[in-house]
Image (tube, rainbow over all chains, first blue to last red; front, side, top):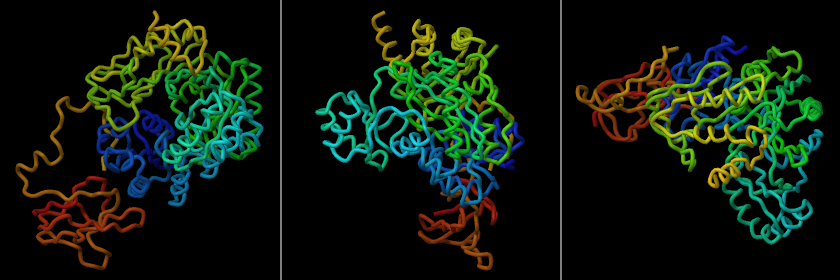
Length: 448
Length: 106
């Protein structure tokens, strides 16, 4: 096991990693920008280093500063969390070259899964089900031809994109010819990669993803699925495990398929395979995320597996503590509490004048805030995750409704009112979900 | 570096004074801070004399010290001419971004 882990992140995930390290008996080094000097992960860490100015480019994305911080503190491993440098294969490689361990996959695996078109090809080779799609397009006419072969409507995607960026729905060839050149320019500007391709567009899909842990030497644990259909502009805001849309047979089937694929790939670390479920209930691979995800707690709550701890163990070359496929027990739902206006979604950072998190049976809070904390303007708006677990989905929902009412966050605006609407919505309660859920909810709310 | 773990308590409700604000009333001069995380060295190598001493005057652009990070020796240059009043970090000690290295007078 490592002696000292540097946590190259901030907010709730930095605290989550710190907690796992503490329980493993590993020392922690927090890094922070100037505005995060008083943050909880900084105060609770064994050591802390200020690495730069508020802007992430000078601090949390500043590779030399992170490495220097590891050097002066004598850390022997780096945990990247999610976001920032967590999927940057070059960073992982440099960390390795400096004699430190990157807590994540091998850089080559990060590269293999990090770009969409090569990742699709890899997924196909590994036998994962794919959405009908095209190869990389060469020009506007080729784009129209390729899209026609796939069948409209299609989603035009940037190979280098991710997190919902660089995508648009195209419904006919004329539009495709018009959209292609600008999309190419935008992809070039945003991702330094102008490659575009398209996939069949499912109007109201569900987002289903599977959590895996792999030791890179033939052992693969598939830890069930999460449903993350409730999204706004491709940003998830509520996630649950298991999915009501997944039959036992389909879950067993997918578990076997993913286990085979991951064994063959030689992947090592925690990872998530994301799928779209179409109207018929068929799953198609979208992408693989080679990091710990925001919504990992719902899987932890229904499997009893500490994913962050196992991810650290795998990186250290230690045996994971889980031996067999753990059984899924009960139902867990996570709400992302964002510092934003609940109606306009405009970020609403500022000073938290009063904070009282919910408690009681079946409630877990992963947060990074406290009374007096100033939510900085420069980072992600996620301030806390409220997770409920119960023997059934219905009980988990009741617990969440209660917990939302108990939660007090004053001084900033949060999306808690939106979560309250979701939790009382009949379609949500019945499990009628799709990635269009929030749009439909807004329509219903404005009519009602 | 912050020693820890610290007991967890919210910070005072009134904002603390900005760094240096209260000191400026009693302490003469201004500060040269570290632009990097790394290790502070007063001389270009162990056998050389230090770049500056207390009382040394320096010119704009002159190297005042080195902050070494990942084997890279970054010379920290003065942005103006002045005099060193106090050296605030011991040779060979780690420094964080923004740490005060020298108290100086323009």
